[in-house]
Length: 109
Image 1 (cartoon, one colour):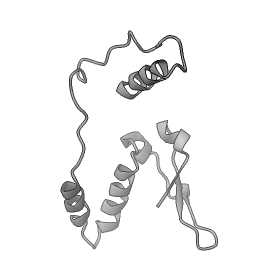
Image 2 (image 1 turned 90 degrees about the vertical axis):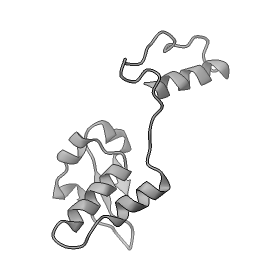
Image 3 (image 1 turned 30 degrees about the vertical axis):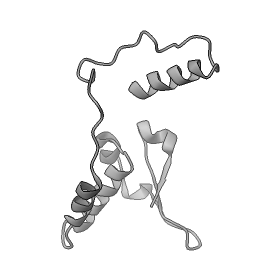
């Protein structure tokens, strides 16, 4: 919501629109006054380094990949093996994601 409000504020300031349609929209109480948090580079490296080889290593690496690409829990839960698109001609593999990320239909890694 904050991103949408910021975009419309910028668009109005740039003269692209006359009125800001998000001007009266308020953030949910849980978000008001809070700055988004993110992992530091060190935390990201530690998280990647925590993935171990063995029985659950592939699963953990796949979950980190989904996290890194911004997939939501419901999107990850809806994934199937058939959603993996095999690479062609030495290309990269892709994944078909359904849900809110549908606009970002394919994630490549």
